[in-house]
Image (cartoon, rainbow, N blue to C red; front, side):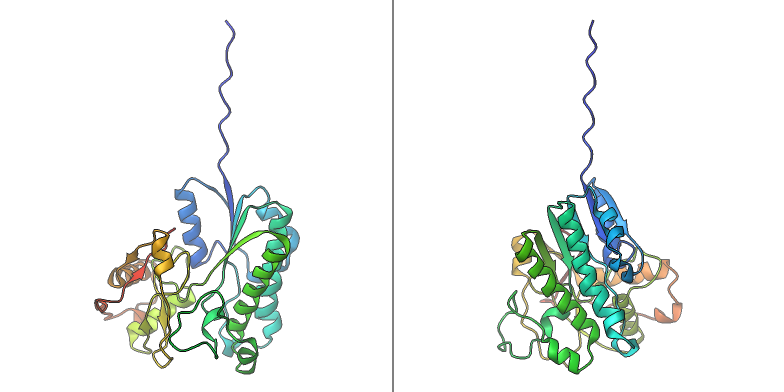
Length: 284
């Protein structure tokens, strides 16, 4: 009797995540693995985004790429903005996209920042910000808001690259990213929450605009003009809110389990948010 060969098992779809060791990147990796993807990840320092050959190796065989990696340095600590922030963000993004184009990747999600949107000086007051709204590079340069500038320039270049080459590129603009940490160190957004809990600073909370995914929550300085934002498009895509109180409790418990310095979290209290204010958990 002729034996029939067992059908070959179909290989899982591969996706690459740059910056896989950071807060956002690690949550994306976790979600992708739970959805049965094979995941490639880059975990080295952002300046390695300038190493084109290593990026080609990382995205080879992948159908999709999440480009998350980008240097995050407080403006006051920057001594050479071009080298420390702008070049890794802008040229690094173009390197990733060029590698994706060469590897015939189907879709790239570029994690930008709400920084690319909010420093929009002439935007009509009360009008909801959308994809036509951009932060002003000249103002950010004059005021030395180097991180904001790097994210704005990188997103602009990414979208132009997509128009020029036909590569499908989606950008998402989170603000502060809060929630349980999977990585061994605190991310910048989590340190903001720790400062709030210690009473060293204060923030209003609001939902972010036209984003395809929200990681946990969003914060802004209270002295800033109220921003006109909307999560309607998120909800139409099936995204649902996670109560702010749950977000904060989950974050704080995570910090404690990770042995974050106890002075950051002592005597912290979590208050329920106003009825109209709810934020979302990372999902898509």
